[in-house]
Structure formats: structure tokens, C-alpha cells
Length: 149
Image 1: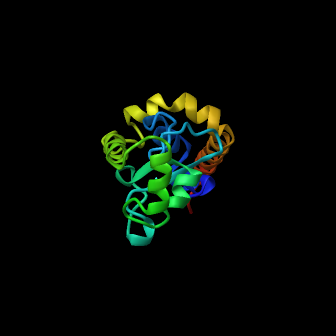
Image 2: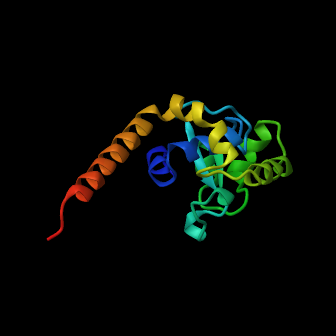
């Protein structure tokens, strides 16, 4: 999932919560991901019916996400990256399990903890969301002032 489609689908706070619960590290190689250099990986790929829900999304670096492609497991290209990072496949799946056990979404503890990260990484998207929400509220208020005939 590209960065902008992830922001559009999940929202900046939930996206930041996914990054926060992964401790800003790639699930597969363990490298720290930088702002603008991350990917959201589907444990069950969308091509195989995986959904955009927190129980199917983990943080990955762009290279590991591309290496994994649409594979439901760990393909040889990704296994090579995992081995080069000094990790085992079992450690990676343990990390997937750890991340998926932490719920993210509106009103969750993870979203609350990730608010500062969201503002640092996605400030423009948050400002845009707030502007859209304000203009929507203004339109609703204007509609309520109209007298029906």
C-alpha cells in the first residue's frame, strides 16, 4: 500500500499507530524506517483477499515490502533480506503476531500514543482532514438554518 493511499484509507492517526506499534522498525528485516521510507504490508496480501484491517497490516521497509510482493509467506528474496539482517523467519512471524495483537483505530490506546508521531509524520494530512471536517460542519450548520417550506 503506498503512503498516500494508506493515509487516505486508514487516516493519519491510524497509520501512525501502525508505525508506533512496530516501534518504527520493519517487521521483516528489523531496520528502522524513516519518515517517507516505509510501507504498510498486508500479512494476507490484498491480491489473495486480505483486507485493510489492523489484524492484517504490519510495518515494512519499502525493500522488504517489494521482496514479499503478493506472497502469503516469506519468499526467497525476502528470506535473503531477513538472513542478511541476522534474523530468523520465526522471529519475524513472532513480531507479526505481537503487532497484530495490538488494536489500532479510532479510540484505541495505540492511536492515543501515536498522536505526536502522526503530527510529526503526517501534519499536512491532518491539517487537510481538519479543514475538511470544519467545512463539512459549517455546511451542516448552514443546512440546519434553512427553513423548509
